[in-house]
Image 1 (tube, helix red, strand yellow):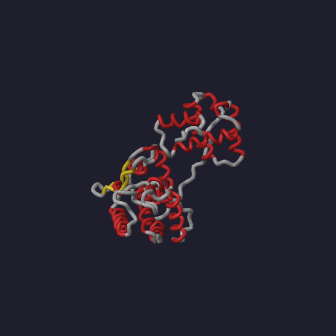
Image 2 (tube, rainbow, N blue to C red):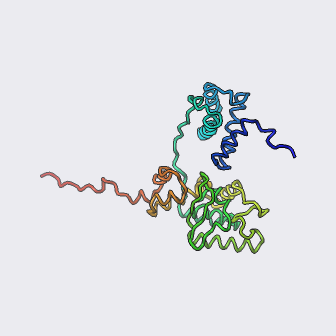
Image 3 (tube, helix red, strand yellow):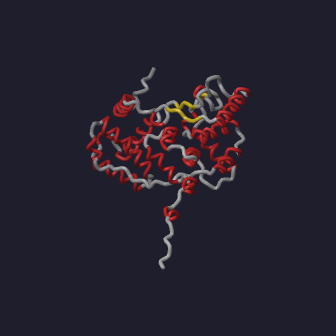
Length: 295
């Protein structure tokens, strides 16, 4: 049997081993490898020969060719691992610096728009999956990798296995969402579209979960069918979940836990789009007592 590692360079193999030792998630590792591949193509030689000036010129090349700030920062993160961990040469990164990205307010749907969105979906699986996105605030990849056993109807929670950052957490299972999921479970089993104890939202072969791209497509189709004039994505449903909870005066730390945010300031962004909360705030101008006119 041929050795599958023969076509992999020793440097790449070492980097993969280093990532495995540090338990980087399977979602993170390919991104780091892509960063190194980009640098290798730019240099035309192995990245272990790179100088600090080479790395500066590489970042300049990315900026000049129109690569987004987000992609540049992700590339730098991958290279930091290579040079700090695998090559033990952190000094070579001295001329690379992350790009400051202006933070945009997230798009949020109103409750009425969410209702129109969900009511427009005719496919039972898609409707259940997108209901989870809004009803529990899960990320697209977290939804597609839910198994039937992750739904705990006794404790009314959803167990997220290895979410972002490779961390487990619990999400909200509301009575209405429980009802929607039970209906989907019955429909799927009656039509042979789900294996016992298998994926909650399986692909056609039932063995694999539905793909994130497929879920995104269903989301865009629903937004179009509902006649929404906003750019709606899977993250829009997650944003709407968080914002609507905030408008219900749910503690922001609770929302942080439900969303799986590592930092509170990430969750705090939603305070800027919770318009119902803003409407309830009284300006100090309104509280001023008018002084009686001078006689």
